[in-house]
Length: 205
Ligand SMILES: [Zn+2]
Ligand SMILES: [Zn+2]
Picture (tube, rainbow, N blue to C red):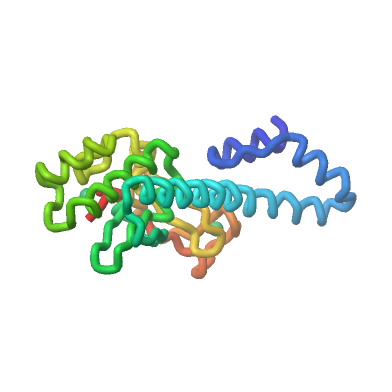
């Protein structure tokens, strides 16, 4: 098994081209530097992938908001772990969970954005009633309930935690019984890397 394969197996989000590794290791002659480099690849590659997706999601949200006439509305990411999207009428802000956005596909994120846009268009007082549902359908939103549809990334381990140091998102099928810390950026228990696991449930509150 080559290095990129073994890294990819340990972390399915991580896809490193063999050429990346070969290219760098050729320039790093000493084993010590090579070790540092591999560590950098392990830590920074997922971050890079995550921020790319977040940037993409932000652009998509702004575009859709403009398309539906939400000209005086703002967009932001929040740190919510249990709900995916949020529509705040008083601050005229639509926000997406950074955690959930980074582990889901564009089509899922798009539906959550549309779900929140529908709230913004009809007013929060309608919650998920028939008026809101009608608007959601009108703007082609497939998520017309507040619960996580099956295609949202939560099936394969809906217990998640983000490492406070490296930002890696850890997923589990069951709530861990013991306190654990991030194994991606430290190979021993570290109280600064404690993983605060939560169960993902709703698309919004
Ligand atoms: Zn909703
Ligand atoms: Zn970490």
